[in-house]
Image 1 (cartoon, rainbow, N blue to C red):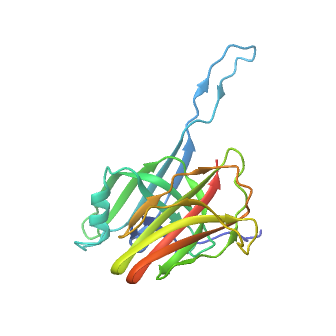
Image 2: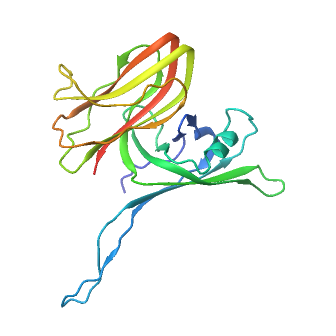
Image 3: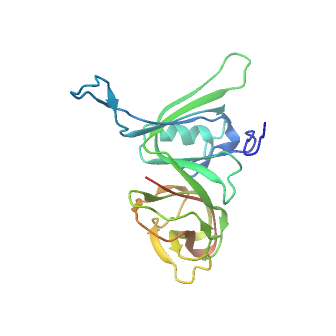
Length: 246
């Protein structure tokens, strides 16, 4: 049996707002399901019909607790408990540009550190959100000057679909660093006449951002991110994921 496309989890990535959880995790799970309300209507068949309704995404991750008082996983997760509108993203491969990633707006509902006597001190975390977006990593790395990412042919945004974008800024250094990220489209890979489709808010510190989705139709096939960087000796570690779906 062919194994093309199969993958053993080794170096997958998980980002929560401005924190890279990857090195703290040993297990990740995402579940995305629609609620299916019943349509009990009169008719000769006597059968129960259902219609796909609102989507619900659940993340259940496990890993090892750390002792860092500031900037570490424990403080990050504790501060996120009950906070809505967070951004969580998972990349099953390595998180490199061009790879598939999943992202959603999350609310951390449970953080449970603990373990048995003699065991490594671990934790589990449970988050829930709405629609799970299957997208593409368009940028993952440090940006130090204004520029653009690689153009990728992701296809058009059809009628009934939307363009989604999520951004994680993991670090920001320099004097007064600033970043404005935008998503552009074009009819060709050369991007001779790009069109800006959405822009994320100006960033001055680490965190997570979710763009307001843009509805189709958009016939352009090619996509890229562009960024404007300001400040003195700025350097910002950034991950951007965009997706096209209903």
